[in-house]
Image (cartoon, rainbow, N blue to C red; front, side, top):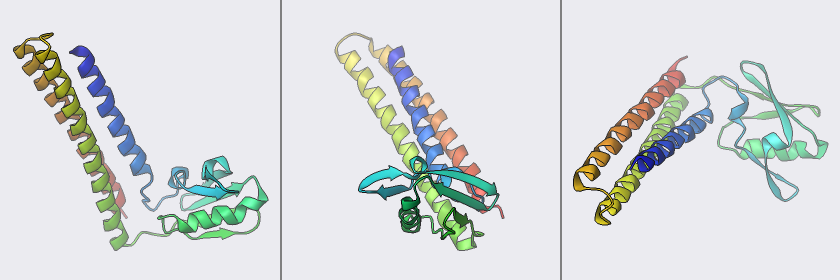
Length: 184
């Protein structure tokens, strides 16, 4: 049973890590390299992450620069940024691609908050799925007479406490991100 609990805790932790990764993709008005990390460039027929084609830097709090190592990749990187769902407008000067991060409008902030809430809800669903799997494993052990009915109920209570703790952490992270997005 301890193995089941440890596995469940590990998987719930991974759901929170995935939530954090989703949050780095939400634009908050400040430039950071992870803003464009998930953009995939069609580099000569091969889908390639932008970080493998170029160096990404943040020279100012509201500017992002991307310097592809291959001169032929400039238009490909530009096209990928324009086609991304970030709403960014790259400017190419032949040596660097500059992206100026515009101020967020109130409407855009509200959209980002909705996206953040959806990410939190997805993380909670993942956590609950881990709970379901752990409870099923415990019921199988009980059916196989490897553990008693009382041990099974105690184990399920422990899994529920673990689930409640991780759901609370996800909600907390969501509230922090919402406050960050809404701050001007």
